[in-house]
Length: 168
Length: 423
Image 1 (cartoon, rainbow over the protein chains, first blue to last red):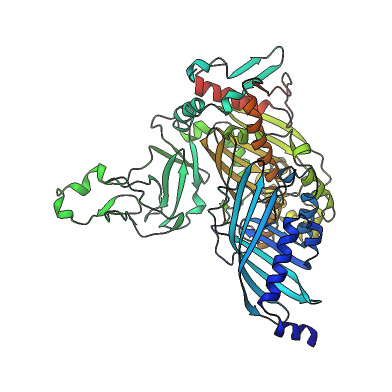
Image 2 (cartoon, rainbow over the protein chains, first blue to last red):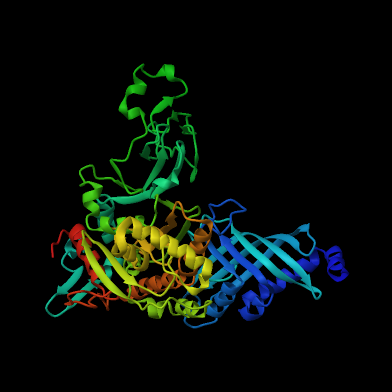
């Protein structure tokens, strides 16, 4: 087995960074259906409330976003419609990704952390989202698929931004 | 023109011609906000928090309520206390954490220590104070003028002479009862709070929270999502009524096709879910009989308690309160409410359901935020286009859940309080 194991041994931070920069570009260019393809079939995407412990579960605590793969695909479908009023016309965003670290190499996945700053501009108002992300990445075909992405906001709730209608 | 001089221009009402209009100045004028602070937020019962947030002696949360900083704590005897979070000595905010558990509260400025009930225990250099200093009422953290709890919902009022909370809630009590009766034990706040803001006037969120009319257009993508979800919706059509509960309180009570954790099954919840919901429903029938059980389980409620508390018992239960920072800016806090005894399965599906619609990351609330902000933008034209139309369903004997009678109830009470105009 080899292919996976070898990849797991040889993959380094630059590979992960390249992947995360690619992901950020897809989001900033609103290529959301392509972005969705980065995720595994059992993937999750979540944004916890900011007054919860780091390892809180959406099964028993209130989050802002806790999507399984189905709901994530519906989120993408929604955001691509004119009737997703919060994002029509589309806001302009810039996802910055930094401080990337491989935290752990497991049998078939990497635990990766990074810091993010995402700017969103719409109707003359610019909001900043900032925090850290945790990814579980599965090496595949010379790149990765995302098994989970959790974005932990460092802000005091969404007091200044008001909503998280974009994908972080 | 000051707020008083505007008293006759806030509303334009003609029952016979079925005209009900609200002046857009009410959403933009700083003098109106000043009047609201004095005549609404200083006078009405305001939601502080839920008893379940303080499960043990020493548990506390700090909140902003009606412009004040409140320390809400459970003291050593298990009593709930609502204190003004300010040091009696020189005024500093005493507790600076959002929540936690404490044995006492200490003001860091000069080191005064207060008990969980706010009584002064010790202060450095106490030999420089008279012997009876700790016995003086002015040495302790001050309690809010009025504090009362109804079925776990804790309220404060800054007007010492206000009527009792129970009288104030009036017709809304029955609906709070229906919502709380979902639990065999008590309802509780689930961990995690949603804190967000909208760049719009606070009254727009009042209207929006009890607006059955906007769902089809504003929330088109949410309804699309429900249709796409596994197995689709319950075989239930939208339908129901709006009720004016007096004192500005109002409720929509209606059926809708989404799943309800207590207790309307949808195919996505599978056979296991069907059995669980049947068990919950049977429990309701045993406790309350079929009629009330059906009402609790299959009807949705958007309950508005004047001036700024919303308890929506829909695809999940949310408690939401909000305050103006400026005429065009409000802050919102929202929580999930659930039966304490709920199984892990039910809790998980409740929260999953909550997030698909509710909150600033959901499939619906962000579009409400957008709508409200665009109303506020539209009000820039208030000089030339002055009036909002809130007349839908006027003259009907039983207003529908998607009419606007509940908003007229709010505005009528608002007008009486702010401008002392009795309709």
